[in-house]
Image (cartoon, rainbow, N blue to C red):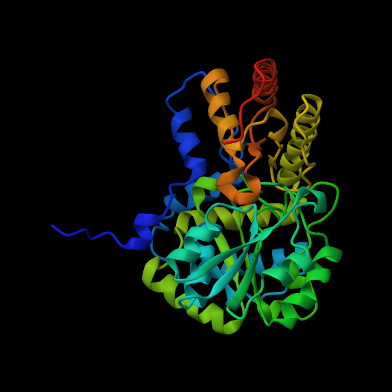
Length: 397
């Protein structure tokens, strides 16, 4: 019988994040710093809203775009929190921000179109671009510049085939952010080459020492920006799978058609939960979000200090809930370090190479876990680093 699997699907590499998560599931004494999932439980009022929706029999489809009440709240939320002004009729509720990424890339990619991707960046961008017929092109982002997209690096990566650039800030895996001034410096390059910006702002609420700036809020950028966001990270709602995407009118229409055929609508019960999350947040100043952010900030400062103290240079993240220390000082690649650490000390981290070539000598550690586990993990990592140094390190291979 012939092989029915497409070449594109066959050549896809498994997620570097899930590999380590799956291994950890077989190790009861292991500590996982691998998966970026809040350790907080979804607030009770939000859970209760979903329960009430079930009790009232709200188990039918919603309209393709999502509940009108939810889209009204999202519109207000974006405007009041980030200065991004999108009317409810231009908001599409999705199955997590992940569906939004897939929708926009399917809506815009022709065969051979180049999409610029910051390196390091979230693992899903490049594979989805490839599946859509596009060509992912890495743009090198370095620790010395805060892992941001600089105008110079962006300009150098652009070719006549470049169609769009992904902005992924606050960034997974580095925790880097782009300030308003840094975004404004890149905008002229985007406009000069008539590019679309795909702005993944899923960590917008998780910034430290300043407020997130949405590129869609800058003059002349809303009409060339697709904004992606959702409830997973800031509202501790990963399993609810609720996100949203806002786009220029033509792209919005194309995404809606794809969404209609592929998904139909996001889960109704989860949409009612999202309504409660935004309603409660707007009434109490997003107190639960602030509480989580303060706890993440405490963990962030602890990990950065701990890695630097053990001699592993660690960039100080200003967003998301990851640190991205360099392990080059050990003479090991991130993958060798992660494999050795998991085997000898039962601590799971993700090799930086899973996020792009620029992460080869880094590992990603999530601090979306409790301080007790983080403290024990740091002790184990320090013990492993000491043993590596005492044994003369390993070759970089």
